Length: 262
Image (cartoon, rainbow, N blue to C red; front, top):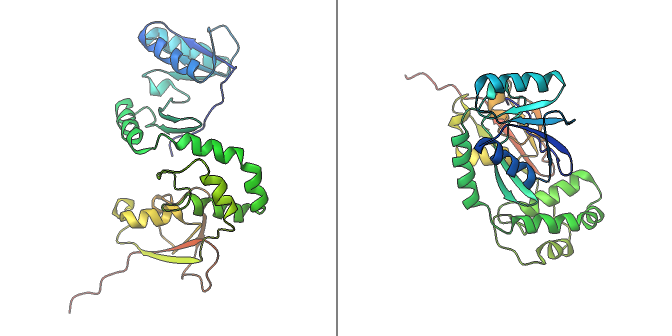
């Protein structure tokens, strides 16, 4: 990753905005939508946005702010920026951010528009309901791993809380009342065709993305292992495990050499 994606809570907090005109007004609207207090350059803040079209003026403003230890986003100048503002899909409280590290705002926008069509309008309502029942979910599954697996099972494709499927208002409560949900003990093996992650099939990429743990032979590149979710355990192993454990385990094998023709 070229940077660490984070969501900064700026509600009721000052954010410096430097600049005037179209660029600055667009950033002002975004900051106000997030609840920030937009302030001038001389104010104290942790974050700043420089939306100045003149190159020399922008560089000077960035230098002044960085000298004060402030993190700066310089609009349309990725080389001067400490952080980037992504394209956003808003299903409050669900936010989906798409960034390219400043490489192409147009690409971020195109991806956001596709995601807007994919994500249901009721996604935010599902998130709010789950937040309201957080303590009830903790009581049902007190252990962290057990709770994580139960939630993943419910949110999985075809699960009782599949975020891409329609739900009635009582869906989360019904799921909670229906009893214990445990993910089956499943072992899947992927034999790579090459060391290029682009050669993974869609099914293989989905398996990696859902895995609780990834076992892999020595030599499997990080670019392929990175297709697994960030919190999935990664274990180097010469062979698949002898016993299955709760959840999905994926064993990744190196490409097999073809036998020479006779």
